[in-house]
Image (cartoon, one colour):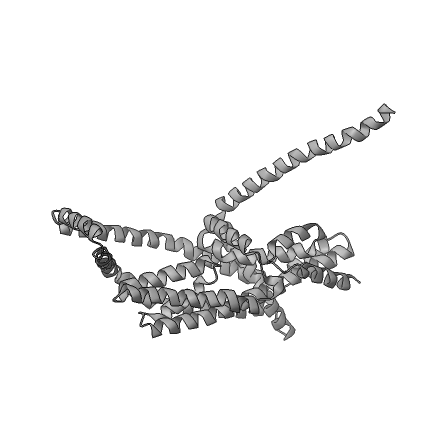
Amino acid sequence: MSDSHEPATAEPKETHAALAPCWAVVGIFLMLFVAGLAYARAFLMPVVLALLLQLVFSPLRRQMERMGLSAGLSAGIIMATLVGVLTLGAASLAVPARDWIARAPDISYELREKIEQIRGTTETVQDAAEQIDEIAEGEDEPGVQRVKVEEEGGGALSLALSLPGILAQVVFTLVLLFFLLASGDMFHEKLVHVMPTFHDKRRAIRVAYDIERKLSRYLLTITAINAGLGVAIGAAMWWLQMPNPALLGIAAFLLNFIPYLGALLGVLGSGLIAFVTLETLEQSAVVAAVYFIITSLEGQVVTPVLVGRSLRLNPVVVFLSVTLFAWLWSVVGMLVATPLLVAARTFCDHIPALHGVGHFLSARGDEGTRDETEQAGHRGHD
């Protein structure tokens, strides 16, 4: 009797021992994966961005094909429109940005003056500031100015040196996007070809089309919301007599593509510009408060209403994803983090083994989305 029970007691120990190396391998894989993302950022950033844009524009390209246009011609029209919009946006930002860069020394001087004025309101700090000023008066003032000019020139030089690399990545992204769009549904056909069973073929196509549909809807909705936010911010800045309100509105439109961090940068940036250009500290506080109120209404009221339930994500996961990709890929990483999460959640909703991951990525109260997706999948299978 004792011999018959030995295999039953030994089996859990073997299973437990086999799971430990598995988790170790997963941990090593994740570390190498993150390190690879950081190491190959110059190549992966434009590739991921082009793939996301291809998913966004594929429904439009497909609609143009139904109208009788070829895939290559449809891709050419989409790319010409996209390049035209980017060129127009860059041209509209060029003149105000150049003016701000030219005024950089004056803005730096005004910022120091404002800080000195704030220091003057406290007697203890004023005494310390006077001692610092007395020490500073003994130095050669032209020499100090020359050092600052050299530092600013060094910053401009580093920006000029990095500009060719940025332009090369933009061109690479656009060229790759054109080839992806011009290839039509070739990758879908190859995906169907490699799937072993008819059920797997249908599921693969359903997942691909669902990711395209949800990603397109998400990005188009967010773009429309951000455009309205930019108009509201620009009008508010004009009403508050801020310089270049149109530029601030465009900046708000672009920054709001970055969840949470974009709104924070906008509040800090608008408050700093107001602090430098307006007369009193109270006026700059009002500017920052108005920016914060408008972005809060957008984030807490407008976006939850207009963005579908199946597209809402766990805010903690979104924040961690944005910060992680910001560390890995800088500004581009912050822009692609949320669309990648939308695609990942859509993929998890279609794979039974990954339903737990999809539930973790979803926002609170969105548990029914997975069930709706499952039911739609079963109806398609039947």
